[in-house]
Image (tube, rainbow, N blue to C red; front, side, top):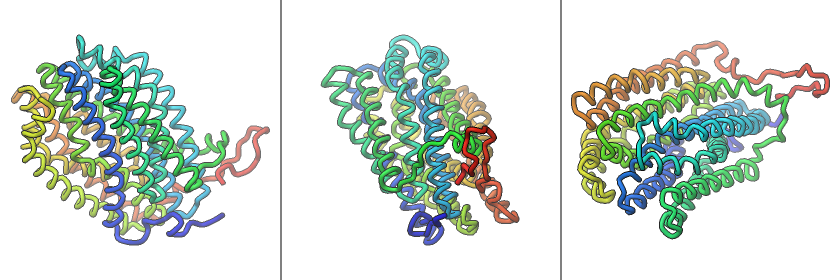
Length: 473
């Protein structure tokens, strides 16, 4: 078996953890923010059409799409964790096999899930409180973009594989390419072809295809990290895949559940409040792209060092990631405070929407330090073999960390109170999650064989027609 040297793949087991965190997060953030900027541009172009129902429709549709995107991100988490740990153990054959089988799993799961979702779009919009023209527009948007979930799943898994080997640059190229394509096509489809919200959806689908193709090019042609598919090997790896993907999906789905409750609560205050949240929802990923990138960027660093059993470096990575997050959030929050009026003006926000935007920029943006803490904790949970902890804390955040706080906030302060309640809940749960992350690192470091449960085990199929060899390589 060919071992992997540091220069050949295990880049994160030496050097400054803070440097690795900065480089990986910055590259991932550029890619993410490019896509998020395009979402913001979508909102801007649609706002030029002068119809409040369009902004509300994007808000409703976005709440549902967050489910599909969150599940697709779970494929990136799974591929990143399994591939990075294999590289840390210097087992490239395992890394290639895991990459192949996670992609296969993603294709199958995304196909079934998107099919079920597509046939129930009206039901989900009803549950969110969408009515009238806003519901009709949201349905038109979703009917076009939901079938591309399989493409997005492959794209996300591909970028996860690239980050696992430390190739942040090509992972960034994939997402940036998709974002640029979307930005170019948006005005063409929305205005040039007069397709409105349907044009925005078509542009997004094409952009997803571009991200997938660029990511797969890096995985296949540059790193040669895909094997020929083998069903026995896939079945053998399925337990390892589900062990991470299952909790990761539940973890990521928990967030849009909480966001959906926030949207339902805001819907009671009218389309103006929903439109304001829609604008905030587009501002947040652009402004805090570095924070959103933390989990995917830090995960491979933790994974490689865990595979190499370098727990001091794992612990240092968590600390450096938190310092990095705090610095970014403070700087961005100051910027949002001084630019809040310009943001309101750019999006031609009405009185209710403007009130929410200004309230967020003035009082709530600093709470993203604790959202960042959750992302860092999730990276530790998913890559240290405790993915179910990520599920527990994220479900807690979406339920007991959201519903009671939002409910009380709405009663006391209306629509602004909804956002304040959500922020207070994130502070409480984010603090508990990161403390649990450090505790798990210490537990792994004290274990006799901390990575034993994660090592590949021989698999010998019992079906006579299958080759009686070790399908795990």
